Amino acid sequence: MDERFDAGLAGWRGTGDWRVADGRLTGSGALTSRTTVGGDLRAETDLRLTGADAAGLTLGGRVEVRVDAAAGRLVAGDGGRTASAALPANYRPADRHNLAVEVRGRQLVAELSPARLGDHLATVALRLDRPVPGRLGLTATGGAAEFDNVSVARLHRPARHAVPEPRAGALLAGWSDEFTDGLDPAWSWVRPDPAATVSGGALRWPTQAADLVGTGNTASVLLRDAPAGDYVVETKVTLDLGEETVRNYQQAGLVAYVDDDRFARLAQVAIWNTRQVEYGYELPFAGQPVYGGNIVGTPATTTWLRLAHRVDPVTGEHEFRAGSSRDGEHWTWGGVWTFPADTTPRIGLVAHGGAQPPVTAAFDYLRFHR
Image 1 (cartoon, one colour):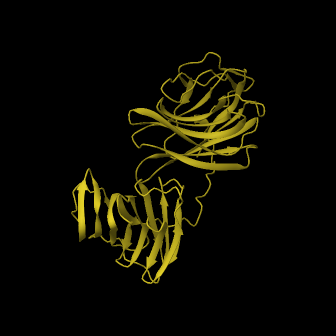
Image 2 (cartoon, helix red, strand yellow):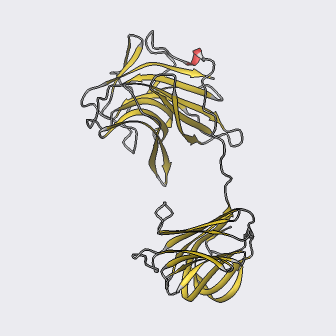
Image 3 (cartoon, one colour):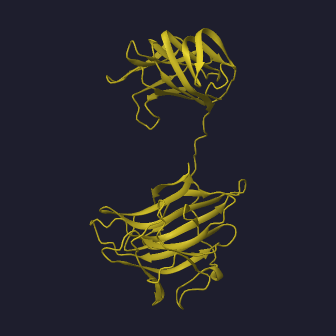
């Protein structure tokens, strides 16, 4: 159940004085949802105590979790049993806060926070007498409270086993390039860079004073088609970024690329005085490109990089999981970025982020494996 009260109080029943305006519920008394969610569950609401002494959620008509502004405490109760935690001195009841309650088996945990970002103002745990049914209620006493974004849902099942790490199988020689005889004709450029050359069995590419992130899209990308289905693509890149000095944001590595506003980039990179393997994803959102990233291991001067591609058998989406290695044998695997099913990501190489001080990335190969 996900309730924003756009349809008024349909699906609720109870006592008291309640009204709906602008999709929010304000009032005092007690309301109960007609919808039931059984088993382990999470219930939450955005809550403002505009005049109430206390307000909160109930489960199954028996368990109550309330913000007691008069007492300055977050309180959970199950019949005669209660547990509580003090609210901080700077808590302001009229400000909007998120109240979240999770029940797994007989263990209840309630949290009050400004924005559901782990910045809890108060947390309370209570061992229940017995599991509760999932009929959700809202209560406010001593005055009015405002409720918004009310929801109750089954809890996730905890993951008990790690997903197996990707493994590189047979080499797909026809899709790969060892950079032993110039640049394979299968490559194509987005914004060609004449400074990139092949010599001595490597693609040698000075990092450009350019970037892909944002709306500028000035960096070059060297691309080739990827095989259909699942595969692992790997490169070995040498990039001497020194130690500790600020060289923002010189980098080189792999990219899964649809266009300038949808790509996943795995690169060893200088970020201020650190050296990281960053796996970032840019995609269009709300009319502009947005970018987020995660860290996948620690680079060396020579770093091995892998993207493991999987097609989701249900949705057809393209899932790319990133891995890095300092010796080509032992791998650190990180996060997954997902591309829509109706896209055809190509695989490429990049070397950009800054030209000063000058540094050249050397790619030994690009290899595809099943």
